[in-house]
Image (cartoon, rainbow, N blue to C red; front, side, top):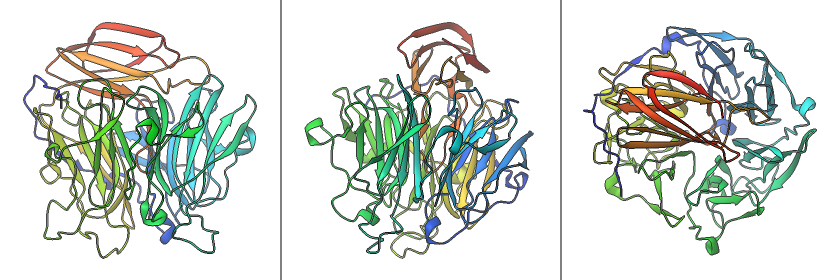
Length: 486
């Protein structure tokens, strides 16, 4: 496997616990909220400080407005209980960020006004929120407009459930006036879904499913939006069955194709994208399986939820955070299950550093986010927990490398350039990230893509826009936030 060799010494990663700077909030509820518990990270008022919207379960969802200095205050938000997750996006193309609020019950497309005000747009946009137990969301834009995908979990109305009672998922296509819903079947209890370019370079919808409820006959899925069909063995699609919880996607080998991290009970499965357009399972020696607690004496398997790549020490090597925690009281799985922070080493392997970094908490974690919340060029951390307060950590790693934070804007319906590829080259290291909406576990981000640059003080930027246009920027100075257009 090829590795990225950054030219800087590795900084020891360190976070400061600032959870007291958040409004008190707990993701609560019974069995319908064993899963979910996501957080959306996005700038809802244009002040360049990312804000948070946290799902609440039986408690109301909460908007937390960034006041600067890593302090957040509760903001106004329509009262919605039953929420499982939240994803920010510009759904109506007006330039303001909206939020897809997933729920046990009717999902809500919340229209943002650019000043952190939100109201339901279901009726205005003809979006059918349904009445399912929704746990996954993703969005893409085609030549015909936006396409939303909703992943649903167990069909609560099935009298023979909950086992082998997975609900259908759904697609919602914009027809120029409103969204038209259609079932996406079969469903195998999706807990995370993501529109992104696969190993072939085609944009497809990946669904990660929980075999705890589909039990048999189900598997991980990949849906081809153009052909309107699921991929199968004839396409080289491997049958993979796991207790799928979350999806993370990023190129870690330097070949421009994104690897995929799938969280689960036990092994966390990394899939390496090959030049043949297929995926192979990462070798155990890569260090990403994170299958058991790394502290304490509980030897039972871990339960992974949200996974996210991010360069937390800016050494030009993407690292990986995995939120962990028992579903509730499942006896075969670890109860004291610390979160995982895997730091990529110069040889491309990953090493556990959550204890040293100060983020190895053992609450029942669910959603999470790595984002620069104070604008200092270092990725901070938010962790959502079930039946325990949300956590906030400032990245105080000393002597980190240089960095760039880059946002894209374009005219038309797809204002945030979802589907664009952003390539940053600093020295002899190239990194590629895609602008996506979806994945994770029940939450996502809309904001700058963060690139660590190591010792490089400038970089070259190349953007492949969703419509195929290519733009380049040379000798871009490090340590700044950029907004680029085509």
